[in-house]
Length: 147
Figure 1 (cartoon, rainbow, N blue to C red):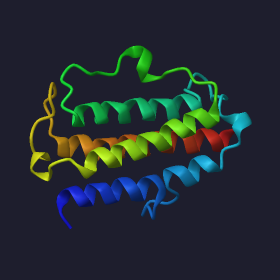
Figure 2: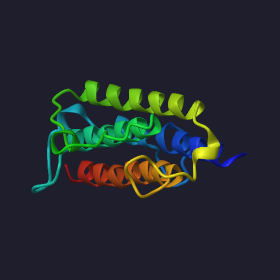
Figure 3: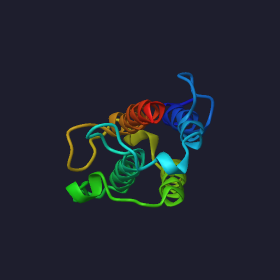
């Protein structure tokens, strides 16, 4: 298996497959009752805000895979308002499909080249989105256990 295929497998495993760390993203989110997604602990972000935030940064990765030099996540995009849990989950699922589609045509030789407008490689970007997803999933799980 090549490097890119390994990254794609990791993205699949952590999102909806056999993640080594425990329940994957979808399994974890499916356990959260809709009436709890807007609750918060103290001044934390709500679960729905964190899911929307994950989508925003996945969209960032998609734009960078398209070599969009000027695209960035603005303050408004970073933690966007969302009131519909089904829509937030649908956006997350769509981002997964879009990410996998973009990676299916991504040239593996570009993995170690610099992302336009950044100081890191595509390799680091793609591993970073997995880390980002799981970091916020941890927050979501902790919040959901407190509610």
